[in-house]
Image (cartoon, rainbow, N blue to C red):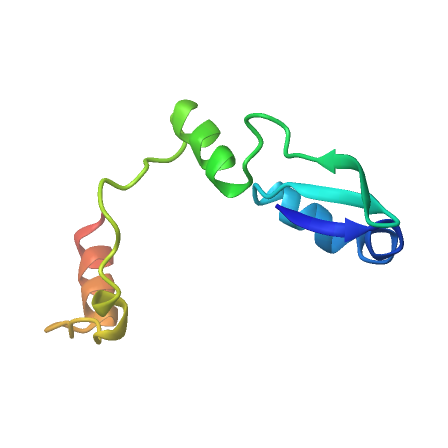
Length: 95
């Protein structure tokens, strides 16, 4: 649990609130004496909570496993045909 004096909390409130939103608790001190604690609201855990809401609504699917980062570094496969040629052929067929 992170500790913050009142003056520091007042000066950097947005930064501390981002930490709380990420799941951390902040202990507020007045002259090195604890006077309050700022905790995240139950169920509000940032992006994970929003993703869970979207998944429950059927708008996104949660991956079963993590994406292999090597896939992002490799070059995409080359097409054997011209995209323009394929488009013109499709238009000629009347689709």
